[in-house]
Length: 142
Image 1: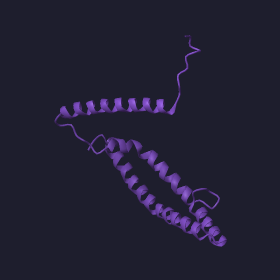
Image 2: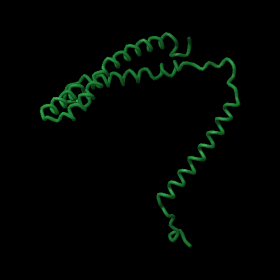
Image 3: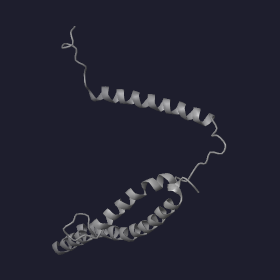
């Protein structure tokens, strides 16, 4: 039999079987590794840490993301995702008499409006974190 005559059946059942075997194998491998890790105690004096170095490293990206989101939320009605655009959609639904649509969009609008003060608070907190990081070698020193 040559390679052209041999065709492997590609059925959903075969794919599910292969995926199940791979998942079971990785599960048993992970269980063995977890057992080995549990048997080995952590060296004494190793700090568990609060993730300060990682947060200091990510702080600029987080700050840019918050700025981008706040800019979008505060934009005019031509910008997708803005509060003004959602307000316009609520008004359109109300004028069309679509009360269920208006209620749904109004609930989304309430959530979106509540994001602004939350993000502003996070932005202020993040500014304090960045100051702390600058004073503590980006989280490597206490």
